[in-house]
Length: 71
Image (cartoon, rainbow, N blue to C red; front, side):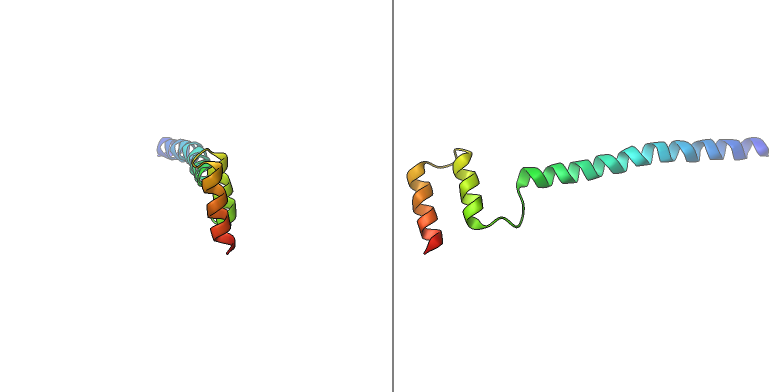
């Protein structure tokens, strides 16, 4: 009977050894995805600035869209 309790404790310890890195991986993935997508609280001007910096639009388009946002 005592042998079964020892195995139970070993499996319980192994379970926590697997769960803790799993939780860390989930948190890391969520934070890295949030960084990739940008802050959800960015203003439209900040989003436009990032798009221009990433080369998604030329300078003329950027300036026109910025003027439209400010009007």
